[in-house]
Image (cartoon, rainbow, N blue to C red; front, side, top):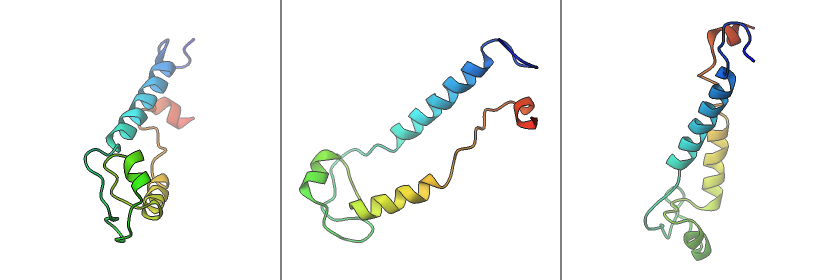
Length: 88
């Protein structure tokens, strides 16, 4: 069922596109390669268990947590929304 100016299935297409964008963003942040033994930010040693669990890790837990808090503050805007839905 479409409403207003949208065609049938447009809402589901928008949801699917938003989910796909988020999956691509998450995949782009995965680390690869050899893990660092010391944090790139503060120089603290990175425990061996963390290096084994996350290949390519470059930050200690404290610095990684701080980085994720900064990133969490941005985003959340649906750039694919139709002009009609933004005016309501």
